[in-house]
Image (cartoon, rainbow, N blue to C red; front, side):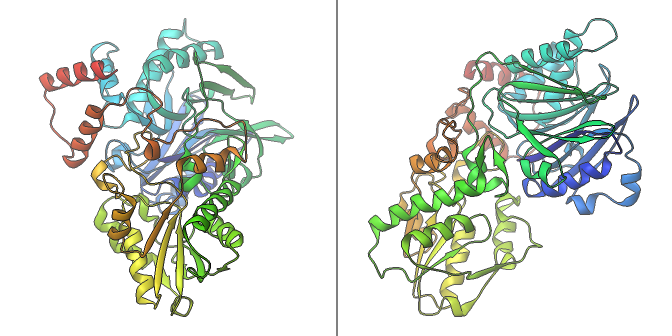
Length: 505
């Protein structure tokens, strides 16, 4: 899970990219990076940490130029090493820097191909560096002579779509030429375009969420289509082409549940309005399962669940209260690496207002239940504050399957709903009752806002992997790698891995 941004401006771009990354900080708190292009030269600075901690005045001064890209990162492949912070750079052809949001499901196979067939060396275990080298190779193959034009770039992206599998939203800067952006043929991860008219010409920004555009004063133009490539040259002229054979829009449903900011609009659907609908559908289910008087008050687990909780309380004609106060200087527990860190951070992150709980039957509403650690701690906090009964509701369905498309939940045994019934999950989090959203209701919550959205990537809920290349063996392998970090893979093992991946494909 990451946030990416690319800008072609009529003036210095470093501050614009920095401000955009602040607006996208919720998408990744592990590392941040900015690379700018001035003439045929790149300047780049990246490091582990939050945006405000990574960049100092001296760093910003070292990033001149009117075009560039940036990223905030939370690792879902590779490691948290500073070496794997983005953007990544290759010097040939032309010089390319790239930032990527998503996860390639065949990156290991591609890494072997890069070495054996394309004669390219990949220095880290990041799938994003693999993606950059695939792009660089295909640009080199599509280019004749020493110049570059949009048609060659679009040809390169067309071949890339045929080689690469998984989810990817990409911004890449080509030295001396401009900004290239593209989205995978399923449109799993979000990407949108904004523009700003100035006296000197049009400026363009391409970012993960619309909030990054609007927060900088840019006007929203449209979403990048699945499979589409966009190129903005350094004069501010925009080119676009569909580069996939059979693109179909399947946005990630979990973006609407949790990942995206509520003030963003993704593929024509307001995240905030979708979360209100989640509360409405969840209220209908609670009406069927509980009698009047079973619940005294509705409380959200701040912040993502607040719209759903408010709408739920309204539909049930119940009091809505803020029972938990959030410490906003603590990171999002879902995206904190390590179970121990998540558990420790819950009580640092939330504090209960005891007077709102004492003697009441409380309905707690959260956006989702992934590992269950946070839920269990919150239920106990409610009891410690005097709640006589704690009912827990999730605005999302049970997370029962690993997500392999860019969200940090790849291990089945880490998911509390995996292999457990709803009653067993309820006991695990020590609640008196538990209510989950239905999968169909979640999808309707989004498509009600934009009826053009008919299909979704919802594999963590329904187990359907839309790219068609995910097998049980694949899930077993990523689970093994996660539990055994940085394995030493000899050449013979690499060859066998490539063979196994080919069989899966």
